Length: 114
Image 1 (cartoon, helix red, strand yellow):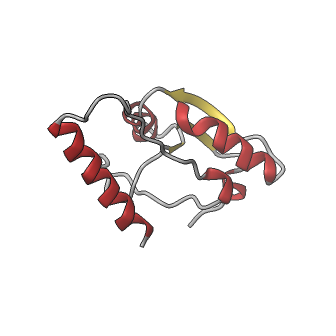
Image 2: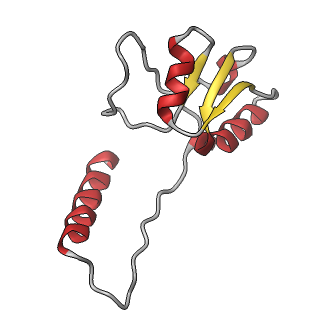
C-alpha cells in the first residue's frame, strides 16, 4: 500500500467524501495535498485520471468496478478510515426490501472484517 507521504507533489483529484480525511492524513505527514479537483462522484474523479491529469483518491472497496486502463492501489493510513452508519425508524417496521438490504449489508460488513 501507498502512504499519504508518497502523494506529496502529485496532482490529486478526490471525491468530496474523502477530501477532509485526505487533508488530515497529509497534514499529519507535514504537507498539504496538491488537490486539483474535488469531484462529487467517483466517476468524475476517475475521469480526471483517464485524461492524465493526476491520480484520483476515492472511497471504494476492492470489489468496485473501475474503467479499463486504470490501476488501483490501496492508500493505507489510520486517518483515512471512516465509520459507516445506517439509520432507520424505530417506530416503523422495515419493508421486506429494506430488511433484505440490511441483512446483505450486515453480512458484507462481517465478511470485510475477516
